[in-house]
Image: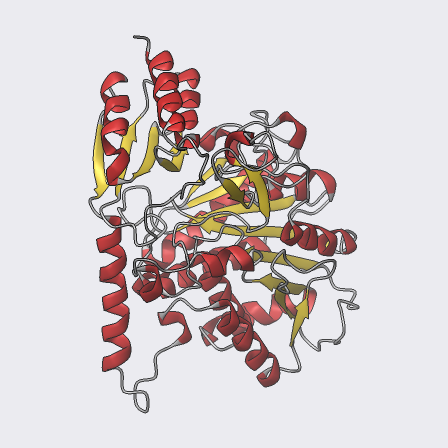
Length: 473
């Protein structure tokens, strides 16, 4: 049977098994501990676009979860439950795809990380060997408390701000830190140009908020005092706004930075959650005659597919509300995205840089995502990207590839970088994918021991990027 038709048949079978005769709802996950879940690294270099699309359809039928898809590299990372392993193996066999097992038991990896954290905390002498904030992942509440503590101790240059517009769906504020010399409080009245940096748009990418907190500490002199001269030079000319977690609802649902909670079966969180938490519809948009969902009620949208950047083309997304790549019904219908958008729009005349941090695979991403054409400022983007990558490499020897989003991942609509570049006319708009690299088996579960080195190498890159902003000639 032709592979594309075979995969379609598999997706129909899996979907049909999702409901009994009464139409009871099913759970997308057997248990949140991910016991015996595997992560497979699949070589898709011989797959056509049609086969890739049918594999995505199989994902939408909940047979597997695609954690990483890069047609350029010929790589697809799949997370598979023990119940669906045979189905996925049938797909791989039919497509003649080779694969390696990146993670044999995701749940066991979560347990091991929880044990490492617990042991380190128990063996640390609080009085003589206080655990650094950058040795651990943290809850959203602890991140906000840390921001407030830093504001109090650096009142001449730091201000915690609440992004405007609406709260998140679950009623949370999105907090950010504004940093500059001789700060004037109560809201960005300073005339200095604004450099925006954010993390935590995707819930499970814990290393991004952790890296944002490291950045803040460097700019406030809490870390790497040897960079004080360059930091002062930048702050005298700019005001920096860093938002550590712009999707707090999702971050908290992804176990809120708590690896011990993530490892427990039956926990009310999901360590691999990606999206927001606003109810989004029914699985595969299928409803019963009375209006209820035929299969499953869905939550959330991908907040990095929810921006009005070629949104209506719907490329690289899914119309299934349960999919990790569901973009929402319309641009900015996710409240956290709308809040950031409103804030940035208000700064349109001041905003000169936008950098958003994700994980994983160690990339510096350039616009556009929705088009394979290169934008007018591509030469500048590549130059700045290469300078940034060099600065990163000089710290710990890690390579970050500079590449246009559409070249690496295929065309994708609704990304934040494209919206900022196109709509706000901010030339220096970039995305980052942090550690680990593509050869690692950790993926989104980067160990806490890597938080500090990730911050160290990326602050070096960020400072170089800020030092090479576009200037009209």
